[in-house]
Amino acid sequence: MKLTEAQLAQLRDEGWIFVPDYFSQEEVDVLKRASDEVFRMKRDEIYLEKDGTPRTAFAVHRLHEAFDILGRHPRLIEPLKQLWGEDLYLHQYKVNAKAKFTGDVWQWHQDYGNWLEKDGMPEPRAMNISVFLDEVFPFNGPLMLIPRSHRHGVLESTKDTQTTSFPLYTQSEETVERLCAEGGLVAPTGRPGSMLMFDGNLVHGSSGNITPFPRKIVYLTVNACSNWIRKPTREEWLAHQDFTPIEMVADDALLELARREAAVA
Ligand code: SIN
Ligand code: MN
Image (cartoon, rainbow, N blue to C red; front, side, top):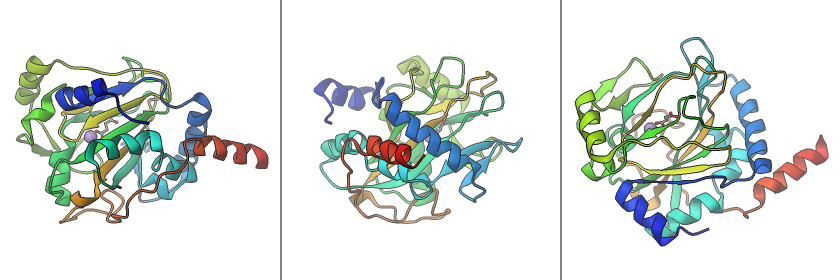
């Protein structure tokens, strides 16, 4: 799977691309079953909301084969190899649950500012790829992105220790207002299986979910191998230190797993 010229241009100019229905319902079902299993685990990698509902599961490639496969999927990995022309490794890999009724806010932030400060990542040569596991509506806390904000590089930030289960460098209201006046605001919505790719410097956030519709999204952060992190300071499941190049699986690997699961059921 390669990106088109138009997609490459949008990624460069706007900092994001969205592809609806990138994975089939059958492929998403495997991932949804896997996320249910993972969120039942009691482990340090599973962070909770204030009321105890699971918020985020980290390092999910080590917790379930389906996520290991997704983290090596050619539909996600090949486009970035095309973009950077080098080997890649997984810097962070999580599922954000954004539970029905209680899913909480993610403040406005840039990821690269956090990777630079906390992990010592030399360059913004890392990309977020998200795959929707639930339908994302305008009302269940979709991810909001400020187009073109990545062009400003690392912006001034302050440390928020309240709303996330771990400290997050966030952008001020003034900065967000200015960036939105320049670039507008988008909140891609779509069916499960849709894919959203966005630049590590793009300012983004999401509001709480008070609807009966959960909004589960998988996020892979893929880094260029030459851009390995130099000064890790946090838990390994938040910023991986295995810089081994990703070996891709076959395009039908998730379907193959679905067939194997069905055979033993
Ligand atoms: C993130 O910024 O890493 C996640 C935000 C969200 O899932 O809404
Ligand atoms: Mn983020």
